[in-house]
Image (cartoon, rainbow, N blue to C red):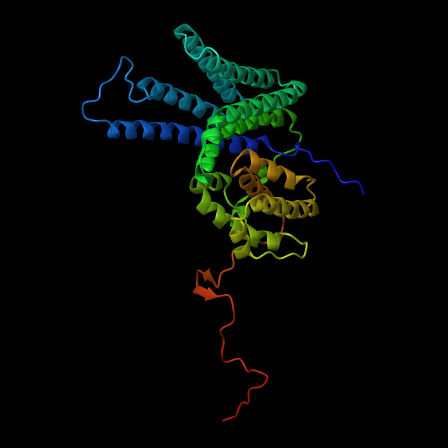
Length: 377
């Protein structure tokens, strides 16, 4: 039997927008916070007799840098909120503001005669990506959206590769393994690969928004769904990834137990072992793939046509640190909605209005046992 091709047409723009928006806000808030911490550290390290130049410079960081970082963060907040709400008009407004911001700083650099080559080139690349995404979402054309994803991916990955190689020149003077590791880490950070992946994910969201053909089953949510222990509110689940490592390990342990019950493939995974295996390089990708495939089989048995869920989960994990986890939990929530399987929390006691707390198991010790001898009085 010929295996079905992996398709992203069943990937809901709602969940992809949530992943993209949250990742974007977390990244830029982290970058801005790091910049402020560096600025504060440099102030503390200066002697009490330090002096400012005309733009308030303190060893490289300026008040102008901080102001531009805050403005960028606010614009990203507009884009991010539009993605989380899955609201195209807010996203268009955010992309327009971002394009104007890049154009403004490019003009400023050119007028000041600063960064004419590298800065103008990087700003030009960023401006092109924003304009392409704007054109895609405004025209709502599938062909343009697909071409935009490919163009943005190529542009951002190539520019990151060039920046990595440019920064990696420090490795020529490295002495020892510690210098090499430090140089590679610095080069990776300067390459802006994380930012590139978020931009690619944004263009991919626009493509999914335009091509989505399914119906979001989450609309069928009922109060009974929330009673199933496999269900987690997706916004709560996403927010908990602020504490990424802690929540990720807790969630892997919990989800492994859930999948052992949901899946009917006869395989039982040890939750404790799966948590420990998360520290093995690349194993989290394998875990996401296998558990998503198990869930795919369970959803198909419930009448939902799913294929390639394992691949989608891995792609989400590559583009963002926790995208696969959010995607997989959203699909577990979908299973809780459409499945008639109980998946309820097991409790020893139930509450009765007349009798109070009543054990679910029998406690009548006066019942005669088969091997018990009863002597009549």
